[in-house]
Length: 183
Ligand code: SF4
Ligand code: SF4
Ligand code: SF4
Image (cartoon, rainbow, N blue to C red; front, side, top):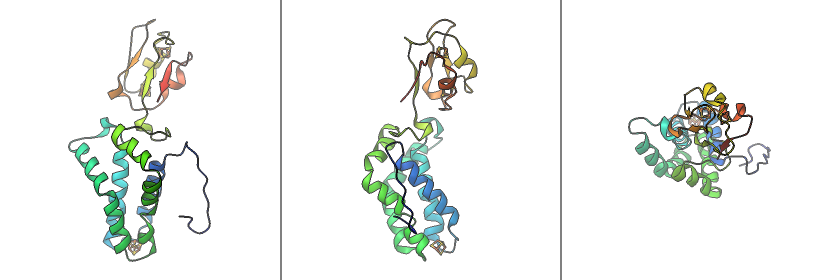
């Protein structure tokens, strides 16, 4: 949707799920709150998008179940908001989700089923690892890692404990031999 005449050009470095999330965040804050479909529905849609761009470690309690339930209801919820909102804001609010789902469904599937962000935009879904052939065991990354996710003895190849990594990127920045790989 072009709105009032804007045209945005994007390439493969733009994540369509992240883009939809950006618009939903904006729209749910713009909602005046007069009618329930727009007020509550846009918040629920944002929550669903937040869940599918979250890492497994961020899920608590019934998080995984809520994640799949949300995905199943995403299109239905979008259609109900479109059909039942009082004004144009609510009636067009789900469009970013519906159009990205329609044209970039594969990107949603990567996030949902493989917890991967092909564009590398959803930070929580990035996977950091260390190439043992390049690592000199200088220990710098382990000292700087905010979650103590990096293990290894001095002068030996280090490794990252995936479940503890929050994807901050510090190890990538400090490693001189470029041994840290992100995928
Ligand atoms: S659809 Fe319009 S009236 Fe209803 S909450 Fe949204 S902005 Fe307000
Ligand atoms: S900073 Fe690089 S070379 Fe040093 S221990 Fe970490 S991964 Fe290995
Ligand atoms: S990305 Fe951040 S949290 Fe993850 S291993 Fe590297 S420094 Fe630690």
